[in-house]
Length: 463
Image (cartoon, rainbow, N blue to C red; front, side, top):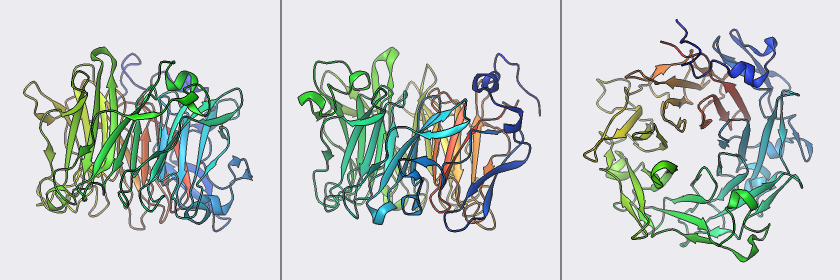
């Protein structure tokens, strides 16, 4: 293993930047978290060059109830999102409090070397809402999107908040954005633009079941949402307005909108939305990317649709967008039953870029599972520049430990694995949710079964 020069390594100065103590450098394995059901300690493993940020968010983490209680822990980490620098993390627990759901946002304190609750936790209003089923954070970590797809008879709704640092509170921006049709599960997936002004919401059971995706913008003449919250907690009379028409799936039961992402490329003033439809083509799955036409006020498909290879691929279960300064980059996860390039049904993760002919081409190699049925590709996450890629395998290991691998591309033709990955303990299924910081330096992974969220500084780049 050979380290890249400091000028080209994505981690060259990060340890100095974070003021980490020598005790935090992990040699083989070494973070301990408490189980909610027992007092025994769980060990969270990491390879040599990795460094954990604080202890995992779990039972004993400071909260408005002093310490997180077992009832609020149920399903903790079912969804997560992180800020651009990875040091603010939103954690959704949709099965907490009798399925009402709960969301907390945590910030890493460099001095204390602990994760500290930011503001108060937010709770679902009623049993069965599943508030926190998915969450999203703006790059600054000041705009939070929370989804409750099972609320309102399955119509679902999404709430958006802005953090008021002076009051140390999350203030609601405008009213709830509600689904249009019964049982469409609006909010199954959510994403937010880097500045917090645009949000995208998936409703995979909408419009006679092909699924739909809707994009919203906070309207008005004032400064953007992230700057002033749209005029206060009530939004100052401003509302969330849909941008363009619904983006629909191709046919019934496509489940379009099961996964979504949004990227705004400032140099070209272009906004892109990725839509995963894992049941399209009878479970082959597909992913399409759309670009907003500001003149026609509509979403146009950008390039061709990318389809899975065989039945059962579930192509598009997870999606993530990046931009390398020249091309739009798309990562797709598809945790099917395949093992390698010889398998009839391929599974794993693949990254694409779009060429001059509007065709998505391979960007690096396909990433295959390490073992059969380990669910590699269940979640994928890209840095903003598309060079750092995280892929989870939550069913990896003889006793379901779960595994997260991180890859870095840079000037290479392929994504090269950084270290040996992060593995959970027995039955953890680590990697159920996953987020790489947009600057590509920190990865956060969670396990709602073992009920903890762990964050690591990504290890040294490898030639």
